[in-house]
Length: 452
Image (tube, rainbow, N blue to C red; front, side, top):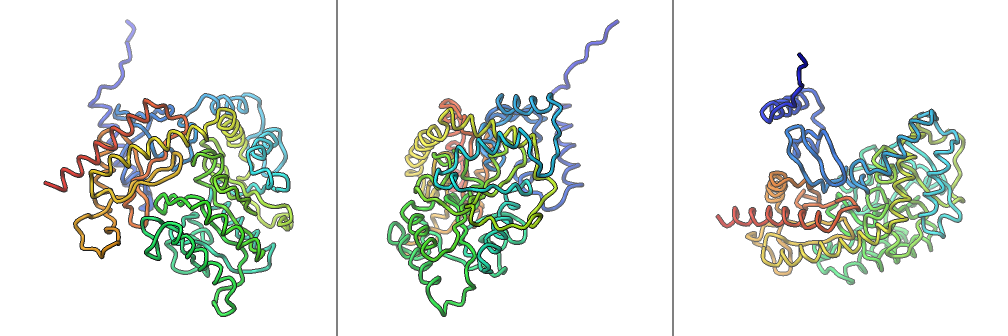
């Protein structure tokens, strides 16, 4: 007699799910991060939806920390990967030329600011964004013969030595810190255009003051929107001013587009909002179509590498290049950057309307589908004109409440008090409404707990 295999019941699925989590906690490094606040075991995913081993479904607004521009397992990505696998092409080729790499590079150059693309070189480096940052720092130091790096407070550029030294949390490393404009928490206490003007003047003064004490600058490194720093968009006029300051002083400007690239902010690249053309662009995350890939694109006159000066065994990932080319083309051909701008403006507008009734929501900000909600302690005794202090405890509670409601969000900002949304650019209007409903319900629940 044939035996019919039955799917495991809910109790069995839950037991397996908990067992996997227990084994992860006992065997993996204490450095694990997302697994601590998101105790789920994904087994299937499509678009914005993830299904866990326990049978629960979630709307994923983390998207691999912004990696999944098209969401999980998009058909064009799967087709591109299968095509390479079925062709018998080598999957590992170091930095040799291949048709797959040629197609990726051609598509990438088609999306770059034209003034850069017409005179650019591309460096394939290690597969993470931090590898590309390291390559960009080494490149500009080599090209200029100068040691110094200028970076901004609140920045995040990666976890390797040089990238970490340029990030906001570092305590040493010889990197000069510059103020980043911030309307809500302005370092000068004024915000708006005046705060941005003061930040630009400070940068100019440091570069021109012979007694500033800073090393000669090899580069200035900036994110068009600070992501991990709390979703802080760089004002367009300020970024244009920074471009002029660096250009006039022959300091290469590096735009870190690891998280802002490929349509995320409502333009294909974050720098496109201001119209500036950086000397160097650092790209990763979405350019690999969900697979590991990172590159540095830079002006050809900076191309002073000696062969092998900056190498990496895994800089020839054919599957990532195929998936990346498919993703870049799909975003470009289907106007997904414009879609992100429209949908992002709608989400920001509705969240700001909702926030007006809740004092613990200090600020709602972002650009495109890169959105942050900063939570604060409205009962704190603060000086007039000073925003209340961040409330990381409330933010963590909201994140847990979102997960209970089937919504995955991340926290960011200096005190992890900013609830961040990074949904795929393919998000539908119906899915966006569901995201808003679950997030605002979680926020309203937090308000009840505070008042109780």
